[in-house]
Amino acid sequence: MRRGIAIIRLKTAGIGLVVAAATAWGAGPALADAYRLDYSVNHSKYGNIGTYTNIVDKEGPNATVKTSLNVKVKVLGISAYSQSADRIEKWNDGRLVYLHSTTTTNGKPVDVDGVAQGDHFQITTAKGTEEAPVTAKVSNPWSPAVLNGNMIITPDDGTISRMQISGPQGTSVQAAGTSEAAKEFTIDLPDLKKQYQVWFDDSGTPVKFDMIGDGSTVTFTLQSKTPVNALVANAQAQNPQIEIAAKKQNP
Image 1 (cartoon, helix red, strand yellow):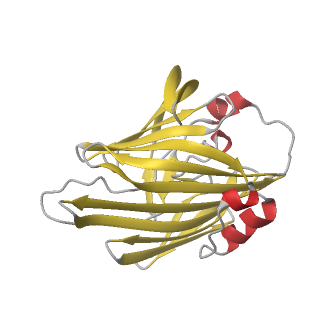
Image 2: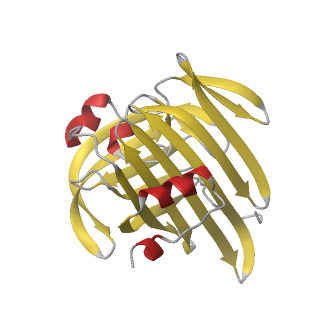
């Protein structure tokens, strides 16, 4: 990154809250469900810088989440910063059981692998192996059902950090060109000196989230929620190289 350009490091928004808050939307019956959430990514200084997508495939107590991130910042037509990522999370009964993440920042890839082992979640990076609490969550607000615990894993480098949650607070938020009622949570990460905010609509869909730090804010705003054929979602989750547009499955 060029000197003098302040770009907030794109650690996917670290989100978590107490179990009681997560149950505000209710557990409901276990049903098969697959959908795609597409977000625009905007920087407070550089404007629109890219896209962020979660493809969620849920069936009973299990869920697979495939995440893609693509951002680029240009100054006077010259590339100043770029980051792309492909990530897979697997969950069982609200517990993270598997994580694989490849994040490439300014051309340098970093791999993070994680697996649940007994009473902890083991994270492996090029720097070695660390253990997170079994209740740790990935910093990816794909559903309020997974928002509990007080430790978070940032998937771009495997950092484990504390989080402190306040909320929810009833409010409204602009997303996809409309204003709608939402529940707002504020998340402080004291170890990283960052703060995050996330807004869920009444159905529990994350319609917007902010990352605040280093004197700037990066905002992720939901542009569409699209049903996805479950087989397509599973294929994409198993192989990050497979990119099948949801629109082709839902013309």
